Length: 629
Image (cartoon, rainbow, N blue to C red; front, side):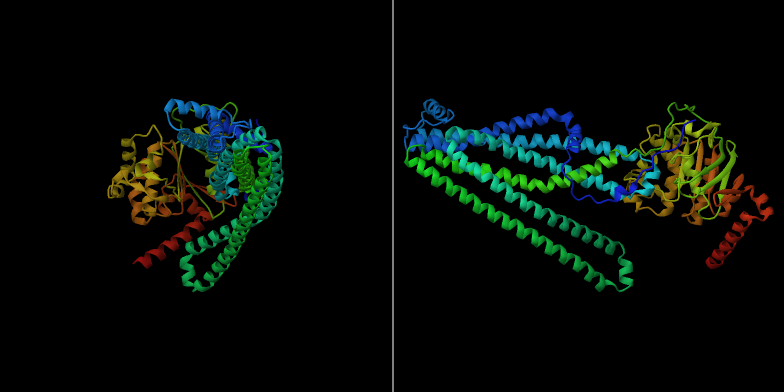
């Protein structure tokens, strides 16, 4: 026998708001695991940006070393690196017969076109690498979350999980695309640096002195804006929450004459958001102006020191102009790095949240060597001394429950609210872990059967029936390959669901809106019966299945239910007298314990709990009939 004890998990971490974390290399390495399958495309993208960067650096060389130094000034007294561009232009001139200036313009135009094409394909291939990687991550995250048990979703808000699949993945997309942008900025930086060092080490050294100044200024600025942007995100979140509360509760707002008060509250939050946005804009504007002035000062320094070198014939005029054009290539990477600063820390928080979800180990324990069920089972069920609590620290919801349900029997389960009726059904569907040798299916311990195999044998109709996006037929078949269109339609006809389906615009091919809002509650319940019948399970469970159906609609399905339950073991959790009376036996639960078992007539003669519940409901029925009359 295996132990059912599991590690105590803290679900509160899913409610923690992580705004920004330190750079975690372990998280980054784990992120790269999703990039590895697409690394060839990524490496090709890096090769493209390398070639584009070389061309981007050679473009100002054409203007300064070929046009200014070689053609206009005809300066041949200084031997300075031109990286083969002068010789290349001479050969192009000989080949085309153009003037030197025309061939230089032609060369510049071809390089510009090739540079932009290479940059374009770099961005496209890098974006494909990122999107494919995050698609795989989103796939793995979704697949992991749909296999978490019901106990997990009982304690964690669904919105928190949606944030991880949507917003957090999007934050990683911004991070990876930012990395691609940085690569596109830093590769030209290093190419230009090597070229400048080859021309004049002294002038290059003066330019390099400015880089730490730019970096320090950018770092202090991003530290300030990091706090401001966090406050902006919080204020936007408050705006959205307040707006959602007001719109969803508009009827209450208007009935309570709270329009003015609610508007004042919303306006206060909105004003706070505006002030914080203005603060951020002021910081960004000040930073931009300061950096522009610093760039002008660097240009002035280059002209000052470079001009002196030109006068002394230590360097050509074109080379000094070349240095001024490279200033932008030096400053852009620092600015880009500053822009990615906040993105990086947000992405670290998102990565931590994603890996919290991916590493969450909570699951229904499956048997190591599961028992294989036959194609059709008998449907015998047994609960043997079953005691269960949702949490180890809670009071038991079920206490020493024992009952045998023979194949084909129809058992009604009744009891006050909170008596454990629905819990009994959830355990039967293996949605929670429970002690071994307490629930049996055809005399086989349910814990020794794979949970998916168990659920194939059980059809459940709940009061809250979920409609998926898609057609009516899709919601009956649920992607089950063993259910044909004809079988699904036959099931709908058997439960009289075709009476409303045929009136829909496109019949069974009608698209249903979110949660089936274009159907009435009764129609959704009829669709639920058709869904279960089409799956043809050996065990049928109706959990308050007719509670939301009017009396006329219920009469339509009663005859279909009789056919549906023939030859099937059926468990009915219901309050309506007619449904309960037609059961072979009735199980009465109170405080999680079995209090009474027997037929309707037997329990009425005992005048116990069932008799009391029956009398109370009978009085309610008489009241409803009197009011209706």
